[in-house]
Image (cartoon, rainbow over all chains, first blue to last red; front, side, top):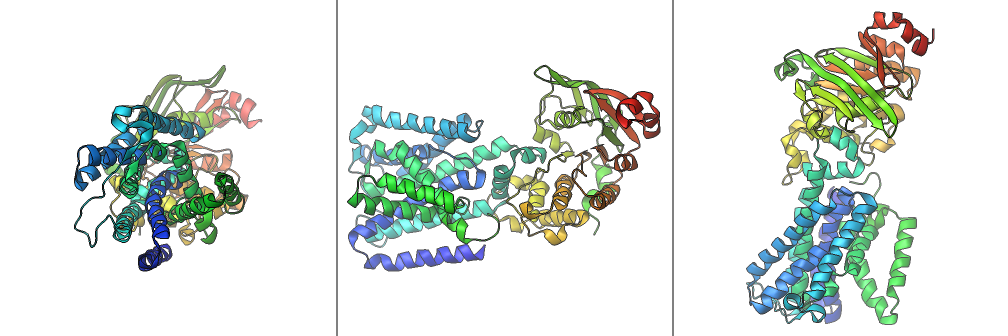
Length: 308
Length: 265
């Protein structure tokens, strides 16, 4: 367990040190990577640890982003209000969707979460009076916080996001090492045995689903401030699919792996799309390569023994 | 150290068997799959502390009956009483909380987890700590102690750090038993513990089963007659989902119907 933690600490330290040296565009991309890494880790709790492949994760991410967007522009709400509203809306959405989705297993679970995700996308697109529809909500102001440097400039904002992501990663790390975390792995391995051992499998899956939605919402809040803009693109299916790819690419059930997957996909998307519009084709090829040659993801391929 | 589940006093203390002392009572229990009546009106009483073997040819409905008792499959008709409580419609995990544990005919383990993690999951299944998210599992000394004691009891303590999927078949059968024992059950359902074992491994398994706490009620499905009849004094014979004989092993052995259709003599 010490190895991965030390490696992650080194990565975070290197990021913090090189950030001031980076030109504006790479720094912006790096900020994007760190935010999306939180989203990927939140999904990893479901996919990697509990074995539930959700295809609707953009819903909680987007719900929180919209909450921040609407409150910060129309109500000029402060950071704390936006933070709480975003987390509550994302968690509540997950709590409602979880009731509908958890009964299903395998492909059915995938399809139901996909359909529920589309419901949120539909609302974002059609409920124009609230969400401004296709135009999206622009001009989301970054908060004024007692932070070294204004969050409006890229470098202090990057550090702000890095600290927030680190907190999310630490909390998720504690959860997956707790008795509850082992329970989730047990459910992934054998639900019937878990029932025979006295576990209320539904309850544990549901809790994992809601916690995962909470952290996806946390990422969504950072995203709204990062872009200053919230639109149906944030809640569309492609966002959910990309997140699923990040987890599969990086290595499900490792937390650090999906963060790495997030970096790979964000950079791939931004660099390759400069040269070709068919970057999804390349992403698809990369994905097939991973499934064929490293089915446990990049991190899984380099760690021996069992998946923990 | 004497493992807690071997401790007779501890088990007697929590003993709350029904007024009539029955650990398990089945009344007219049936289960149909389409037109097939896999279990057909089975009535059976297992007294607390009793060791009973459930025998019968392949397809007699033995494993289905276990699934009905454990709550993995709902009954089509009939009534199941566990320690004096009607559990007919109760979910499987709540039956486990009453003190029921089972093993599976085809090993049902957590393959990607280590042997120790497998046992920890079993140990925390009925422990309030299973919902704790705020501190690492390594801090729960009591659960670790129980997991290690159970592994020692089945002879797997040297394999604690190995993934369950890398165990030999014989070791997987031992772990299968360990998972059931780590919950400290009052009623243990053993589904063919020696399935697929070599004669030497079977003998080891028999010795392990012989060491079980005598206060624990055990219902065992076993094809190896030597092992079944050594462990159990009472025998129930199932044939096409019906009970065709029920009594002491001597009486059942002497039963002409049983001899004709099952023992083949």
